[in-house]
Image (cartoon, rainbow, N blue to C red):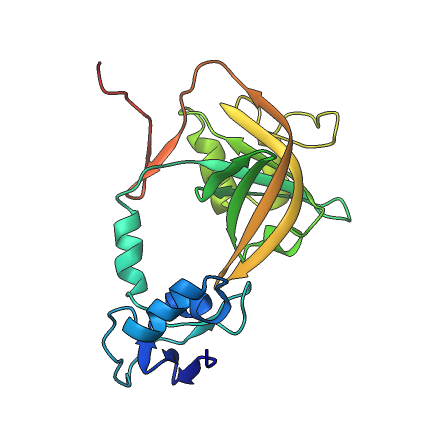
Length: 232
């Protein structure tokens, strides 16, 4: 098969235009059958017209040769995300010089349980991001419903050095978690990926703790609240 030809910011393969999110498969897939289908039928995408007001393109950190075209207005995505409830977490670490940093985060998700790994997304402009690199010891505290003061303080209400007032003494491995949090996960950063304005951290969990029954602090539509289950 002929290698794919780049047409502006898209991939042209066998006379068909392939959308950006299939570009990697078109160039790298080991499946000859998939490649043949793309060459023969394309992916149903109309040929793109040059856009005069297109947002800046981004190259992915995982595959720098793959150019991503913005397909949706960022404000619209932000508005839609306000409809999704998230548990409020506090991510904390100490820099190599011993300076303490902590910040709130809602983009925290389980990646897998074998090995236990969490992913955390942080804005690259946040002071903590400068120290959130491979090998860094990081603690993630899921806040309880009554810990709005902690959330506000770690979201910018207090200087980083004063945020330590919310934390318990360091554990055996040196991690600090928020005192009274509903759950905590501590470990080492094993991988970082830069994606646009944010940094994605993969944390290999070494220690975990919970406090009583789950009653997390939830963030929805710009407001804090709690969770109320639907009666059975």
